[in-house]
Amino acid sequence: MSSLKNMVDLAEQNETEDSVDLNAIDSKLSEQKGIGFKTVKNIFTKQKKIALIIDAPNILRRIHDKQIRLEDIEKIANKLGQIRIAKVILNRHAPKTLLKAIENSGYEPIVAASDIYIRIVIETMDSIFQKNIDMIIIASRHARCAPILRAAKANGLDTAIIGFQPGFSVAVKNAADMAFQLEI
Image (cartoon, rainbow, N blue to C red; front, side, top):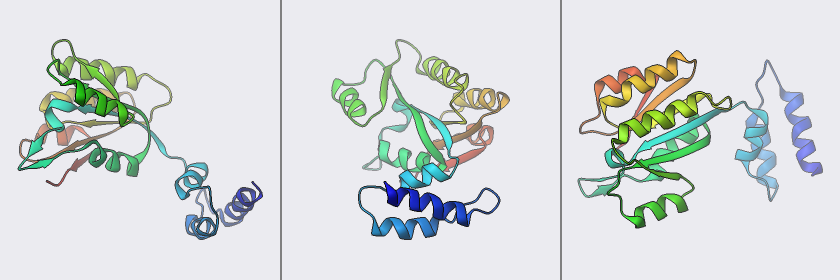
């Protein structure tokens, strides 16, 4: 615990206009055990709180013998901030093994009774009006997600879209503040 206090003291000494020398803290952490760099980084930097909504039928699929994975999407989201809400929207044809795998990965699987994009709107709007969210990230290639992103922006949130080619809509890329294309 005293080593954490030493790192806090070091950070306060190195602080200049709301910035912290994370490299100095990282070098101290490399000597320590039991505490990770990401933990200390979260203490000293204000990270965006993210709601991540994934359109499973559109994104979690095999393309050219390569499977798009949740980890690929999560890696991008983690670079933008801290994931607070992680939901995967599935259609009613999703196998139980997929539901179990999504749940075991720490995501909340939600099975849409009818149109999947209606459920994406409901979950995204619910996230928009939570006070602890700064950014909405939607993983989808479909243009039907563009109005959802515009609604999030109108409510003061940052937005991002994650998708891949073929079929990554230009409209949805333009509606988001940031667009990320997964490499296949």
